[in-house]
Amino acid sequence: MQNFEQTNTLILAETGKRFLNNLIDTICFYFLIFLSAMLFDEVLGIVPEEGADWFVLYFILLYVVFHALFEYFFGKTPGKFLTKTKVVKRDGTRPTFWNILGRNTARLIPFDPISYLFSTRGWHDQVSNTYVVMDHSKI
Image 1: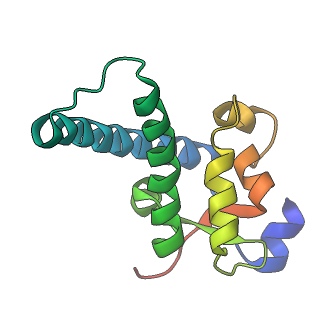
Image 2: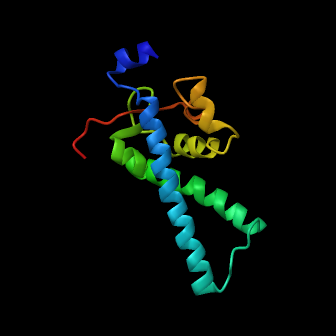
């Protein structure tokens, strides 16, 4: 990883910031799930029962879409906005739609959140060939 940091003048986000990103994003995601469950109940009259197959699929789809939309349009999720980090390709350019989709689908790999114990980049970073770096832009 040393060559990556020196060659591209991009600084990889520290593990603590990555953990904070995940924590903030998880809180935001569950708030979205809560709001959508209320919407299902109030507007459609559908109460998502615990373990309902359709709600599990909805949950998974929304999880991927939540992260993918933020990262595709802004290069960052709510957590990355707060920690001033962003997602890039190795050369520092913006990831393609396919990089982002692969990255966020790979988040579903079991034990992905603990993959940082074995590497400086998580499995979803490695699978999609993306990096989370410090964002020094004004926005």
